[in-house]
Image (cartoon, rainbow, N blue to C red; front, side):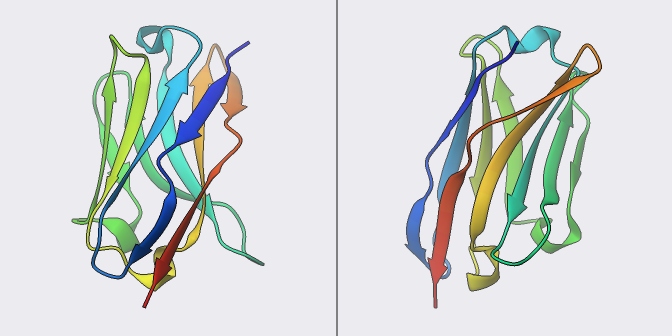
Length: 115
């Protein structure tokens, strides 16, 4: 069982930055894939960024060049640095990990970008 706790969300003006954190209850060294998803009201949950254990990253086209996914193995934490935020980035952001063919979700953190 893996517990994930997100933090770092909040209200920010367009053009601003936020850094989301996702603290894991287990060593992330053993996690195959870590990712951030987001879900806006009335919409499906979409992949934002993905990081494999080998260090490969993937980003949604809408966030490329603005968001950066990273991890700190010693702190067992996944990050999402979000720059140049836009109102359309407003959503609940969820941390997701895959370990031993099982998927785990955090509780989500709200990000609101005002215009």
